[in-house]
Image (cartoon, rainbow, N blue to C red; front, side, top):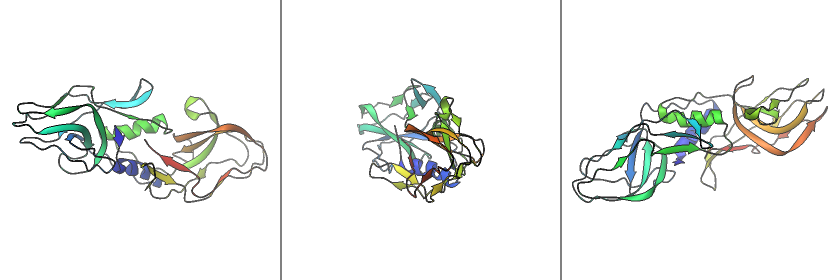
Length: 258
C-alpha cells in the first residue's frame, strides 16, 4: 500500500516540532477507481455498504521489511444487487469522510454481485515502509494505524562512522556537537512524494582535534542522545581533521517517506 499526501505531510511535519495525533480507529473502504495520493477515488456504493473498522498488529520486522497486518477478519455487508468492480482499498481515519492514510491495488479485482459479501481474512491487508527512514521511525509511522501518536521533534544533524542502527558510532572530539535543522513545510515533489528540505544553512563547528572517519550523515530526533530518523550513507569516508567544517547549503537536505 502507498501513503497518501495527508499521511506523508502529517508525518514530515513532526520534523517541524508538530505532533502527529493518531486517529483512535481506522477504517478500510472499497474503491472502484484508484484513490491516488489525494485519497479521492470513487468508493463503491450499494445498500448497506459502509467502511469497516480494521485492527492492525504492532509494527515489526518481517521478511526484511517493517510492516503491519490486519488482526481481524473484515466482513463487509452483503450486496442486494450487482454493485460493480472493486480494484482498490483505502484506509481512512473516519467511517465517513475524514482523511485517507493509505491506499493500494487489490491483487485481483473484486466483482461484487448480488448476494455477495466482500471479505478480507486475517493477515491479508499488509502495509509496510521502505526507504532510508530508520527502523524506529518506520515503526512509529506504521503504528499511527494503531492509534499511537508521534510527538514533534527538534531534529539535529549528526556525523557517524557507520550506520547507527548497525553499530556505527557518532564522531567525537573537541568542539563537536550536533547541528539543529530547521525544515521548510512539506511540498510535493515531481515524483509525487512529499518532501521536506532544510531552511537553514548547516555548519558544524570547526574541529580543534581530529573527529574521526565520517561515513554516514544522520538526522537525529534530539540534540543529545535520542533516536535516528534518517541515515544517509555518503558512499565515501572522509577523515575529519582539525580545521575542516562540514556544511550543507539551504535546500541540500531532502527527506521523504515511501
